[in-house]
Image (cartoon, rainbow, N blue to C red; front, side, top):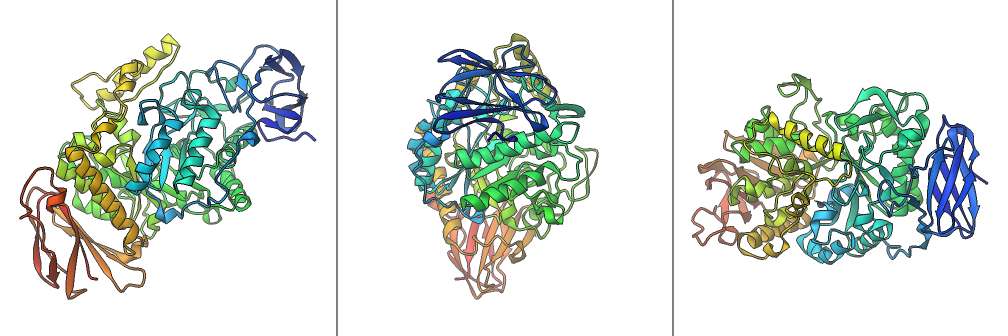
Length: 615
């Protein structure tokens, strides 16, 4: 029996059912082009769907649809585009892959150590399978979750992924559907969860044929990246199902553990049941069916706790969200030029608020926005926020693609690592950050339309005009721009890079083995500002019987700190000024004392962090 609301192609042992949504078309043809050409008329169904069951059809068969019976276009819900965004779609039989992860049950949200990577630049080969040999390295580092930048089919072979135009199809140049499945399988075998970045706020320009089928887009709203999607206008039911079903597609067909949802504030929906609430319900049902956690993490510009509240109390239902305010408030204390980029940040009190509350802007007037912004997130559990020093945006949207280690010195880079890994939030590293990789991460594309290439090049130049950069941004279309963005893996065991790598390993190990650092309840966190020089995090165990002091000095001068009377003796756990963590041969005279009593003044060296425990 044919059914609606499952866009794409579903195959059984002897047939495949083709489903496509085109509510304003009177006719739809299926054009099978390989291995045997056929032109078949599809049957109209309710809610604007067309369907057709075809017998004796094999995986890999290439096909187009003809909306209105006129011109060939790829399937909007194609699972594979082996010839690129303009070529025919190909049938994928997901049941043919033999999964080896039947015992995988996921990782608790609060235990996640995330690692964002771009498939094309993580290795020289730039494929899913080429990542697999590095999984043991990531396990040794302590990472237990990788987050892939978008892998939905985009034009050419070089792109960040946010220009994807086939949300269900896996990029052919990365290895296609089987390549992604092999990577996920291998990750689960090593105890690593896989998160995937997906984009539901716009589609890229090249190869975007959705408007040939139906009202996927609306002129009611605007986004900075392209036409807004129609989530609340006429015929929007099909659009909502198309994207909500896409989330389930990744969880079910690719065993993905979590989705990172790009810029959810640019998904506009004024309906009674918000699109995110609608998707939340479907994901929770699938979660019960699969018997493992399925995570949804938002990138949100709203500074609103409703993002991570359940729909029952008026929320969107996300399990977590990226905390940009934490990045901004920390970065401006590390890089003196940071205030030019983030004019609304700069005070030590703001970083303290980022630690204690989450959102720094919670109803304050923000110069950048020229209005008041945000609502307080005090009391929201720490596991609801993801913090980072770097990500694809923070690095790639600098004109020269500089990583943090290229902007600040070695000591401040260590300080930055400790700031996120000792936080009461979920930490995320950007590929190569752990060993201070010095490859830039540029913005790159590989379009085929000359007018579009020129528009991207000019748009990139205009984007940086407001920052008064003295250099021209590299050409996004130039293949060399892409090649320069690839990691320099050979450096990770050399000199300062090896020390930085060991520093990250030690901090991650401390986070994973210390019960106090595993407590993400912010009610058990106290933050003390040390003038405009540093802060102290006083963290408490869940049973409230033991404490940890994390003392940060962001200044170029020594800071005096008096130990609290919570314990008669404090024992040092880690100190960035100990000899093993110094870039150059030097005495560790600047290191804090190994043990100290209560109410004792100690000196915390410039640009350093040290941690004390009372047991």
